[in-house]
Length: 400
Image (cartoon, rainbow, N blue to C red; front, side, top):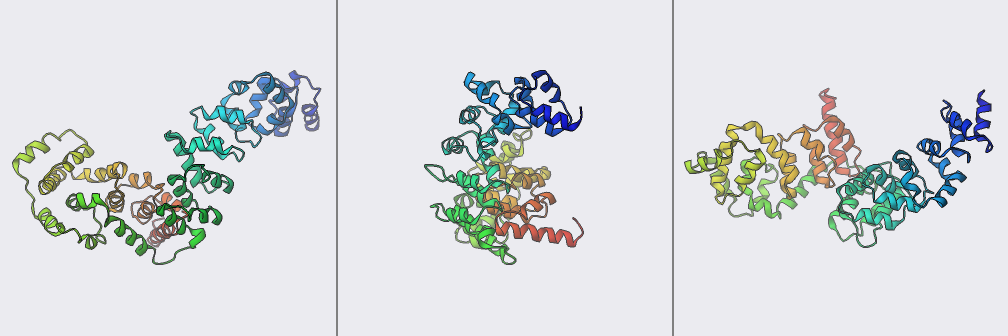
C-alpha cells in the first residue's frame, strides 16, 4: 500500500474499524490524522489519536454520538487526550466544568489558556484559595506567549481586580498598551505604578534607573514599621543598605542604638547560657526568631553577634530564610540587596511580582546569568535596565 492509497483508505468513511486500527500505527502523520477524523474509528483508537489530533476528534461525528449516549463521557477519556481537547476552542463547556474540579495542573492550565472559557469559570480560579490555581494564573499572566485576549480576561473578574494577577501582567513584556492603560485606572497605587513603568508605556530606560529604584526603596523603608521596630537588629546583620541609612535619621534613637550595637561585643553570661547553649541544634531561622523576640535590643544584637561569630557560614542562610518568610517588604528587599545573599535565594525570588525585588535581583552580582537574561526581557523598564547593565559588566570582564 503506497502513501496515496493509505491517505484515501484512512479518509474513506466505509473503511472497516479493523483496517483503521492498523492505519493508526502508520508512520505518516497525515494518514493518522485521517484515521482520527474517520467516523468508523474504534473508540479506543479515537482516544489514542486524540492526544495528537484533538480538533479532528471534536469534529468527528462519532464524538457527537458518544457525547449524546454518555453524559459522563469526559470521565472515560484518557487524561493525556483530555488535556489536548481542553485546549481547543470548541471543547464542550461541560468538559471545562469537569476539569475544573480535578486538581490537575495541566488541565487547569488548559482551561485558563482557552479563549472560549467562560468568564464565570475563570473567576472561580481567580478567586480560589488553592495555591495550584494561583501558580497557574501567575505563570500565564507572566508568559510573553499568552494571547492578549487571555490577559484581558484575567483582569475582567466580576467583583475586584486581583492585585497579584495585575502585577504579574505588568511583568509580561508583551502586555499591550490597552491593557496597561486599564491598569492605570486601578485604585491600587502599587498596580498603577507598575503599569506606568512598563516598557510598552514608558519605553526603555537607559540612564537614571538605579536612582529611581533606590529612591523608591528609601521611600518605603522610611514608613515601614518593622524597619523602625527592628532597626538595631537589621543594622547588626548588615542588612540596612548604605544608601538607606541617612534617611532613617527620623528615628530619634537610631544613633545611640547603632553606636551601642557596634561597641557592645560581649553579652552578659546569663544570655549566653540561656540562648546559645539551647540553640546548638536548631536551625538559623529558629535562632533568629528566638533572638528577635528578646526584649533587650542591645543584648539581642550581642547574642546574635556571638552566635554568628561561632557559625559565620550560616549568615547567608539566615538571609535566604528572610526572603522566604518575612512579611516586611523592606526586610526582604534589604536581604536581596545584601552582597552575601545566595544565588538560590536570588533565583527563587526572580519571579516576584514586586518590581523592586526583581530590580534588586537584576543588579546583584550573585544572580545567575540565565536569570539575568530573563530579567533583561522583563516588562518593567527599570528591571530591564538593571539586568542589561549587569550583563554588560559581566561581558566586559569576559564572564559571560
